[in-house]
Every structure is written in C-alpha cells, then in structure tokens.
Amino acid sequence: MQTVMVIDSHTAGEPTRVVLSGFPDLGTDSLAERRARFRKYFDRWRSAIACEPRGSDTVVGALLQAPVDPRCCAGVIFFNNVGYLGMCGHGTIGLTRTLWHLGRIAPGAHLIETPVGVVGVELHDDGRVSVDNVESYRAAAAVAVDVPGHGRVVGDIAWGGNWFFITGHSPAPLDLAHEPELSAFTLAVQRAIDAAGIRGDDDGIIDHIEVSGYAPDGSGARNFVMCPGGAYDRSPCGTGTSAKLACLHADGQLREGQSWLQQGILGSTFEGVFRIGERGVLPRITGRAWVTGSAEILIEHDDPFAWGIRKEA
Ligand code: PYC
Image 1: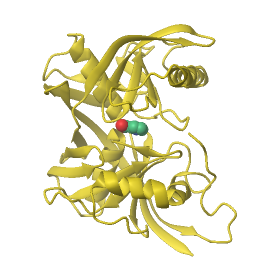
Image 2: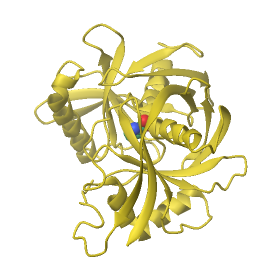
Image 3: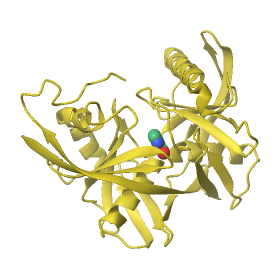
C-alpha cells in the first residue's frame, strides 16, 4: 500500500491538488531535470493522483519539491491527466493558498521555483494571491489554420509559461451553456494546429487553445481555454491571461501598469497587469483560491486501477 498526502483547493473554480508527501524521491537537480525524471520513471504516479478514479480531467497536480534556489520557499512540478505543464497560474495561486493554510508561509512576497523558472508570488492579507509570472510574449501574429468544419481560423501564438493559440473566432457565446460547442471547436483547432505542424518558436507544442472575447452579459473580457488533456479551464487561466497581456501589449491595446480584468468561462476573474520585459511583458496575475480538502490517497497494488485510468494526450 502506498500513501500520498494531498491538499485540494480551487482557484476561481479550477482545482489544484498539492502533493505533500509519499512521492518517490526525484533527487536534487533542477526542477526541469526532476520533471524529466518524473516523466521517465514515475509517470504512473501522475495518473494515480490526477486521473480517475481519484482525480478527474480538470485536476492539476502540484508536486511540492525542495527548491534549488535558496531564495525560494518551495519548488513545484505541475502535472495533469495527460502530462506536465511548464507553469500554471491558477496552480501557483492554489499552491500559495495551500502553503498559507499549512502555516508554511505568511502574507508577503515569496519566490517559487518551477521547471520554467522562478516566479514571484505575493500573498495579500485578504487571501488574494498575485503571481509574477515568467516573461510572456507573442511569437507570431495572425496565424491562419484550416479547421475542419469551421474553415479558416486566425489567431496569435503566444507564450505565457505554456504555449497558446489565441483567437477571437468563436462558434458560440462565451458562457457555460455553450461549453460543448466551445470544447468541440477548441479541440478541433488543437488538432488542426498539430496537423499543420505549427509550433512555438522553441519548437514547443501549442497545447492550450484560448478563445478570447466578451461576456455575453457585457460584463467584460472573457475567455474559454482548452487545456491539454481535453478539459477546459474553469478559471480564467493564469498563463493564458499572461499570453493575452503579451498580445494586447504587442497590438498597442494595453499599456504598462494598466489593469486587465479577465473573466473565465464561469465568470470568475483574474486581474492582470504587466511591466515591460526584454522580449515581451512581465505579467502579474491576481486571483483567489480556497482550500477544499485534505486527503490521504491510498494506492493498493492489487487494484486494477491503482495507477489511474490513463488517458493519452
Ligand atoms: O492557470 O495557467 C493556468 C492553467 C494552465 C492550465 C490550467 N490552468
């Protein structure tokens, strides 16, 4: 029997499962090397924790690690139902809330190490968390892709800690009632991008598709983000909001220090602002998370689904 201790939370509706203990030793190399070791030797632990029957397609796992950089209060490797994430905005907010819940940090500024770099967080007294995300930039503007059943769809390729294709084209209003159409559309875009061989400028797979528009009730900017693994982001997506800020800046539509309120498909909101970076923008994303549970995950070796119901990307 294996025992894994986790704390669950949600950030603006999107779940995060922080893994505290019970995980195999990944060593003390960089977080990127530890993530490679996780993928190569311990991938079944990912599916045991994130996938059904213990998890779900929406769960983002956050494996807590000792940081290499002594300035950091924690290291983290994010994963989901099909693989690994570079950075995760909602997950960082959930992790910060969880560390506070555990009494490991107090309100104030902290650093967290991820496989794609060190990110800053600020835990506010009222429970809001601001994430100073990695530098975000638009790699290509107005890229056209032929999407079967939808015709030519045009969007930007942008980095926000993950690769995004961001389009203003939407098959339906951006509300939960139209989630099936929005999911089918964004999954079709994802397949078309893959088939066309369109990649990020580091050859990275564009595995997040973001429809960017407005809330049907006129309450502000809203998105719908399809994540790798076929689940849509319930939150406004921290890395997706960062990538959007980079595009707004590149188009001259948002100035340094100007606030951008980004709703997700549930209507929950992140606030984004940015400073100018070397290549793009340095985003600060603010949102809130709530802890929802504390659990001891048990893995029985004769359970036919001990290691989760695995799903391919
Ligand atoms: O908030 O960056 C984010 C995110 C990525 C995937 C799910 N949420």
